[in-house]
Amino acid sequence: MVSVRQQVRNAAQADLESSQRMFAAIQLREQRSIRLQATNIAESPTLKAAVDTYAAESRTANEFIQRQLLNTITAELANVADRVEADAIVVVDTAHKTLAAAGPMAPAWPPGHSVPLLSDPSAGAATESVAHIGDVTFQVVSVPLTLSDGSTLGSLYLVTNIDRRFAQQLGELAHAQIAIVTIGEIVASTLSPDSQSIFEGAVPTLAASGTLDVQGESNAYRRLFVVGDTAFYALTSIDTAAFTALRQTTSTLFVIAIVAVGLALLASIWIAHRLSEPIKRLSSSLQRMATSRQFDATLPLTGSSRELDMLTETFNALMASVASAEAETEAAYTAAIRALATALDARDPYTAGHSERVSVLSVAIGRTLNLSADDLEVLRLGALLHDIGKIGVPDDVLRKPGALTSSEYDTIKQHTVLGARILRTVPFLAPHIAIVELHHERPDGNGYPHGLLGDDIPLAARIVHVADAYDAMTNARAYRPGRPSHEALSELWNASGTEFHAEIVSALATALPVATMTASKEKETVPEAYVA
Image (tube, rainbow, N blue to C red; front, side, top):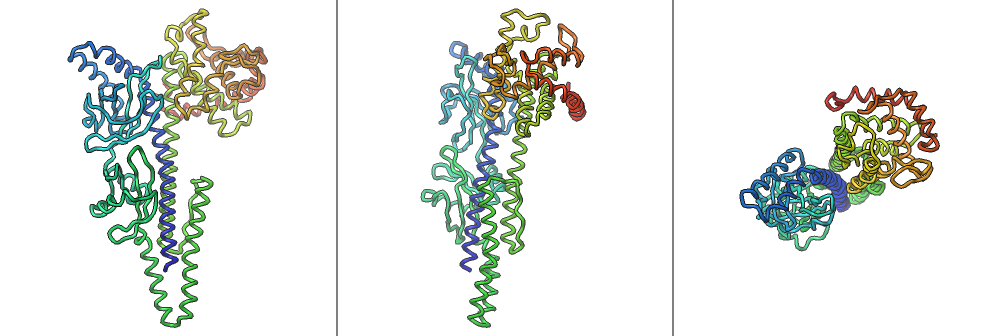
């Protein structure tokens, strides 16, 4: 009985420890997704313009003009409020005072209200914290609003209300009770009122993990994570988990004890071993999985006890939640990149679809060169973003129908450096920076922006360079028609060794039939509106 209870206690604590790791992974992915949303909103030119106008004119404008300027900011926030995963979107000035807010919880952030906290808006990166507005607690992701010259206008907050609904969502993921504590006081939980009162009284003495008696039941608890001055705890009842196993063991021991003390001793040892060994195997499996961080495996049910199978099913459910969150994050990641590429192509009807075609050609070349799956994924998304820096090129230069002047050409050449600078602000786009910055380098050293020579140019950038040139030649522009494929290939061969790498041109020639077939299939599977 002692052995079973101890093993159940250890298993419950191991489950909470696994929950902590899962929550850390889920929290990281969710925060990465929210940061991406916040960063995309904060980069909105119209929002920046509205805030900049207010900052410049509010000191001298009358009350009516100021209200109109604030209404403009509020309207910009309302346009995106329904598309973000937050209870409110808030813009504050450099003095941490609310300018405007949109979303279900916007009334909690009235204009002119001073926001306690948080982070320095000039820090230049997204940060997480907690804000207390009246008796409401919010989890906040803060992103600075900066102009192109580096000056700071204020900050943009994506806020989530930390309430019982929030605690219930965490509890469903963890299959445990949740208590959210701020400065020694529970602000939200799934506990009963009596249990909540007992737990709140014990908070000042709690360690990061351990056990606590709540209303006569032994509970294992663990601090899942901390944001600012707010800690998130998970609790699970050890007595509830151990009840069935202890009841079965007690009955068996009682019957055997009547027969003989000696037989009872042997039987108890055998039963303890029988019950504890599967738990040890499960604990070992959990430890190996945690060490290797291979969370895609599913643990099989032992069939030795309902409690152990329940624990295994709970763990497998957590793994499925993590896998689902990972898939959603990857989908959001890819969608964000495609949106950036589509936004660029939309500026010029003659280059519509250019980024997608270059991506397909680049992957086909990469497969011909036997690149790994990871390298192909970097190549695919990097090619989608290769011209993202042209967002900063004026329309009169980018869409000019005739030949460019020397000054205009120098302006166009800046798109590689500008694109790399844009990507450096988003950490998860770092693997694609080399493609964006170096895809116009040439093996003879006459490329830009750095004049790299030969093999000093990364392979992915060399591939996109060839794919970019081929697509540009074979598709019509305002000032010329598209050229046939064989003429474009001949042009590439003539410039191989100087402007292009010969082995990449050769790989393109081999891959072109496959790339054409792949592009056709992708076009069939993409909705017509998206292709347009």
